[in-house]
Structure formats: structure tokens, C-alpha cells
Amino acid sequence: MPDLILFVAPNTCARVATIALEEIGVSFETSLVRTAANQQNSEEFLELNPKGKVPTLLIDGMPLTENVAILSWLAAEFPEAHLLPATYTNLEQLKQTADLAFFAGTVHPIVTRIAMPMKTITDAALSFEIVRPPAIKDMDKTMAMIETRLAQGPWWYGADWSIVDGYLYWVWARITGVGYDGSAYPNIQRHFALNNERPAVQRAMAREDVNIETLKSENLYMAPR
Ligand SMILES: N[C@@H](CCC(=O)N[C@@H](CS)C(=O)NCC(=O)O)C(=O)O
Image (cartoon, rainbow, N blue to C red; front, side, top):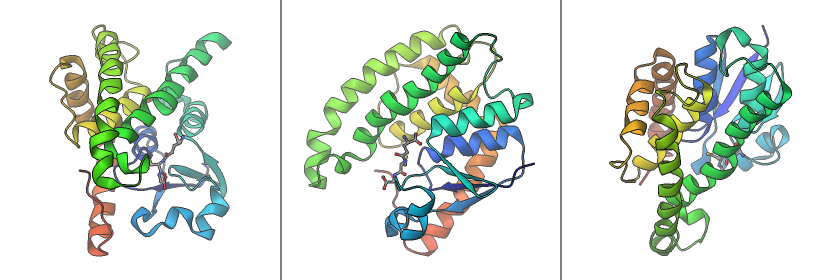
């Protein structure tokens, strides 16, 4: 088994990789990155990931970055965990990559505009007024599409859970956690509730809770707002 260390921060998209590792059931450690102290841009961390982002997965000491790559690597390395459905052609496999890339490259930036609008314009108060409302409109369009897809569910690929569902789980928690109104999307609400019942998801959230307590004790916890 490879030695696995996942660099994480609470409430971030590192939750998706944490869920993936918990679903696999492989032994791994998480290493908390204190973003409020800008640890992601420390010399030490930038040596591992020059982009200064979580998640970063150390595999036998070698860093792998980007959720799409980390999740694809985990799915291929641990096929018995069925993080993604089995594929038989290059095209089928690339369609799964497209699904992961959709969450990483299309949905995640909208999440950031809603949950961290101050990353788009520096005036924090103004950012909530100017950046968030149009982002909510973009998210409504995205969620309407996902709601339709999940009508055949309960999961993204139908009957069986996949890590794409873990991605949607994080997105939904992140946006509703800052007040996004999800009432028009009953299929996504059911999807979120079903995810919450999964032992692996519960273990991932428990790991995150430990990190939140650590940050609180250090006065470094930034609660979502
Ligand atoms: N494309 C990257 C995005 C990673 C990313 O943006 N991570 C955020 C947390 S959700 C982060 O590390 N933010 C810290 C910062 O930007 O300083 C991926 O999918 O892994």
C-alpha cells in the first residue's frame, strides 16, 4: 500500500478527496493547512504544490495536485472501491473525466464566487453585494440541470454512488452553508441526505471536525458566512 498524506483545510474541496479515501478504506493521514495563517503559501507547502492549494496528496512522498487528477488516480489505483463506474472504452472514461472536470472547472468557481466573494474583489462588504448575486443566478442554472439529472438517481450515475456524488455533496454543503436557497431542488436535497447516511462521508466529516476544533483552539477558524 502506498503511504498517503492528504493536505486539507475544513470546508474546502479537499473534502471530496477525503471522502474518496474514506470510501476506499485505505490507511491515510490528513495534514491540516492553516489557510487563515496563509500556510498554503508558505515556502514549505509551495515546494509540494506551487499553486498553494488543497487538496494535495502525497503518494509515497510524491505530490499529486488537482481534484480531477487525485480522484482519477484513486479510482484507478483502488478499482475495488468503485469510486467511478467501470469503463470499457476510452470515450466512456473521458466522459467520467468530463464529469469531474465539470465540478472542478465549472461548478467550483461559481461556489467560490458565492462562498468567498471577497476573493473576486477585495472590498469584502461590497463583494457580497456585487459578486454573490450574479453567482447565485449562475448556480441556479447549474443546479436546475443537476436536479433534472438526479431524477433518474438517486446518484449521478444512477443506482450506484460514485465520487462525482461526493463532489456534489461538497458543493451543496458549501453553498447552502452560506445561505443558498436549495428549496427548488428536492432531488439534490435527497441526494445530500443520502450522502450524509454513508459511513465514509461521516468519517470524513469527523476528521474535518477535529481540524475545525484545532483551528478554533488556535483562533484560526474562519466560519463560512
Ligand atoms: N483546481 C483545484 C482547486 C483547488 C482550490 O481552489 N482549493 C482551494 C480550497 S477549495 C484552496 O486551496 N484555496 C486556498 C487559496 O486559494 O489560498 C482542484 O480542483 O483541486
